[in-house]
Image (tube, rainbow, N blue to C red; front, side, top):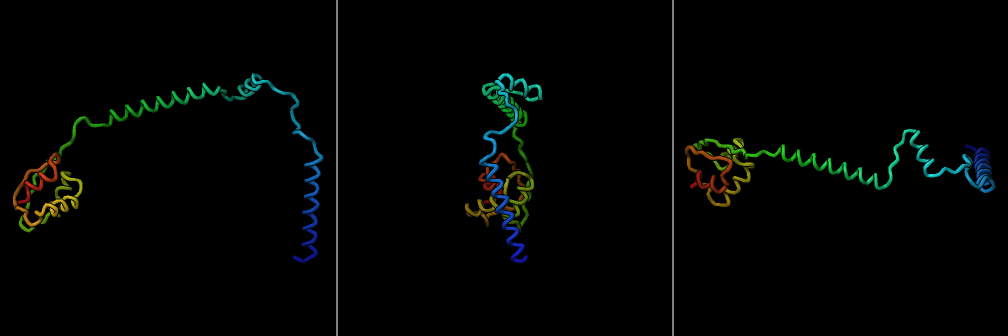
Length: 156
């Protein structure tokens, strides 16, 4: 852009700003539109005829409270329906061969859903100091047993 075109652009901005200021200060004081003032009832009727639903603050709060109670009731029914009445117990026959480790036993018990985590089982065996006391053999264990009980059955 040349300096002459830049001056022309700036001059146009100044003229436009001046015109906007003049209209703002010397224009009508209020927005023009309908000069009639509607009463509250007339406003409600006008909105209702357009398809809007009008509620008072109390009616609105009552509807929200009713919706919340319906939601709470549905959640309560869902909880009672989805909760099993009996606990599922997984039972397995575990065969420990010579050379097996506590990690191998833990992985087998985890696959059989007797314990939740094989690493935690192995750590519990090591904490008790029974990692070298694994006895080869066949054992029946289930998920109702505690980790300590399973360790006492399989390890010396």
